[in-house]
Each structure stands twice: as structure tokens, then as C-alpha cells.
Length: 254
Image (cartoon, rainbow, N blue to C red; front, side, top):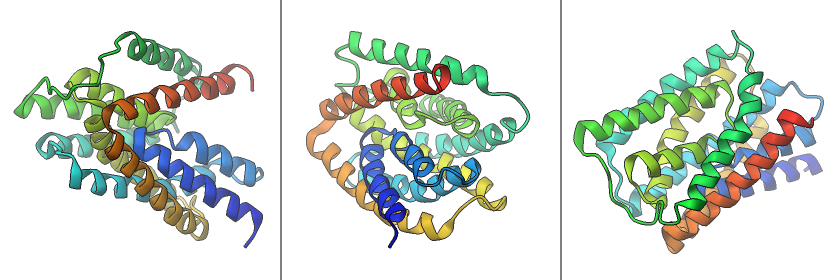
């Protein structure tokens, strides 16, 4: 077994752990793939990343669903909207220049971080703001917008989903993270299908990484369920801070 395979497999395990708790696994796995295979086409590395990540998010969804009450009547339409949004975003990125979004992203993330820090009670209590069709409508709006973003650009998708579920739907961080996993699975699946149809997935590598990602997902899910909303909130702050540094560097210093 080559060093590169061991390296990206361990990165996939860590990414699965982080992603299951609060999203942001791509912050670990995508740079690892680019480091291990610097001469590979970027689309192939992105596709291989999705080929591993989709299994971890799907597994986390199943694990959360067994222990956390999910609003399927709202989340299933939202997942469908996220899938459509992701496909549209992936198509749009082939038509327009996304550099403006790349430069704006660190500032958007910074605003999310500041808001979360200032609102110390944000996401600590689970008090859904909407019911029935209104909840489904708001969740679907979140799904299509963030799904589009994931297909178009991607970094921080899981964290954006968690924040919007907390802020707009009134979920605590644990329920928001559990709900976000279903939508993130849909956006990952849409992107994976797009990459696969164009031949941009190294399946031999993606399948090995997928096993590690699922194991990491199991670890992360258990940590989140054991320690609750406060732990997920703290992890969210750490991940968003790291995303600000990474996206800021990519946009202005690279």
C-alpha cells in the first residue's frame, strides 16, 4: 500500500469525523488529495472527494435518525430541493466566473462566526420556529440555495446548512447538524453523479476512502450525540474559524 493511499485514507477518516459533527470535512480531505496528487486534474480530485464523502454523510444521517427526532415532512422536500440546486450550481459554474464568490466567502463566514459568538444562546435550545408546510417551505429554500452554492463552489456547505437551520428554523445545533446531513448527502450525490458521468472519479481510491469516511462518521456522530448541542456549537465555531483562514488564504494570498 502506497504512502499516498495511507495518507488520504487517514485524511478521509478525520474528515468523516469532523463532517459528522458539524460539516467542513472537505476542509481536510480536499487539500489532502491535492497534496498527494498535485498533477491530477482538479475535477478528478473533487469527484473522488465526493465519492468518499457521500457515504460518510449518508451514514451519519442514518445514525442521527436513530437517536434524534427529525422532521421528515420538512427535510425530504428540502433534500430534493438541495439535489436540484446542486445540479443547477454545477451547471452554472461551467457558464460563469465564480471568482467574485471566492473573494466574498471569507467575509460571509466571518459574519456567521461573529453572529454565533455574539448570540451566546444561539442553537442551545431546540424550539422550532415553524410547523407543517411553512417549515417545509423554509427548509426547501435553504436546501435549494445552499445546494446551488455546493454545486457552484462548495467550501463550508455543511456549516452553512447548520447555521441556517439554527437561525431560520429555530433548531438547536444537534438537531441542525443531524438535519443538515440529509441535505448534504443529497448535494454530494448530485455532484458525484455529475463528476461520474464525465469520468472524473477515481473509484479505486474513492471506495477505500469511503470506508474510512464511514468509520470517521460513526466516531463523529457518537461524539455529537454523547455531548449534545453545546459540543456541536463549539465544533461549529472551530470549523468556521478554520474555513475563514483557508478561504481567505485561497482568495487573497495564493
